Length: 126
Image: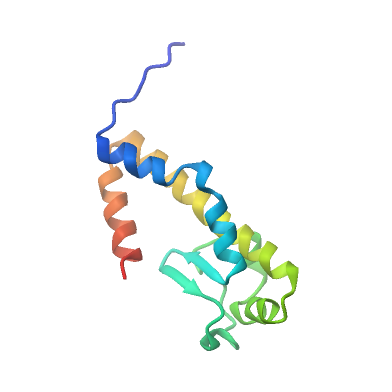
């Protein structure tokens, strides 16, 4: 079986480089500071509005953190500096990034990377 190179536009190469797995340190660093990556944008879990929030970090996420613990509980763990919080939030953020990379790969294979970029930018723009 022959492997052929995929021709990509320069903007696709740039976007993929910024999202490469070599940059996976960012999601864990963000998690340690209470910044959570979600399908609706970034969520700052240290914000007091999440103190009694019973919702998962991201309702669309199926990671072990989102299926078991609420925003309020995870916020509490962060507040008391429980190391488990950093681990659970890192699991979520890494899962989010891996799912995004899977979506990027699928978008590249189907020629829809531009659509994915627009959707992500729309969700994540300030």
